[in-house]
Length: 114
Image 1 (cartoon, helix red, strand yellow):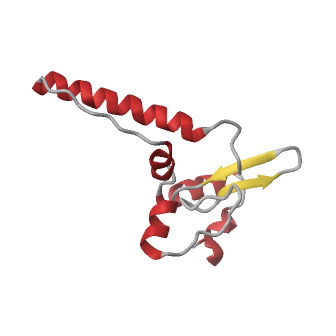
Image 2 (cartoon, one colour):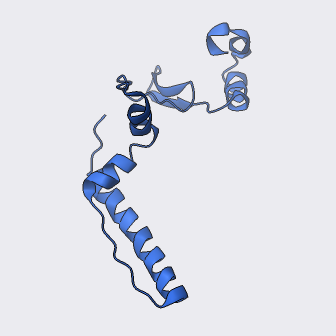
């Protein structure tokens, strides 16, 4: 899904701020300066997180998931009666808490969610 702003520009600025702070720390500790070199492409690729790393290791192109995530299941948008809800359960404890809140503890025994 396309985001509304140029995230690569923003993330490169954040990487730059971190690099400048590291360079200042190095200067304070050693008295030496640093050369900071950033590119939008490098920062964009680094921001792809595990998607890019999985591809580089396996060669397998990630399938499109829309708003669904890879970190935990469920991790996606669900259309509800009045508005969409984005739900993430990153571990078994969170999934059990969601099932209790949704009054669907039967899902805890469902093999699809093991």
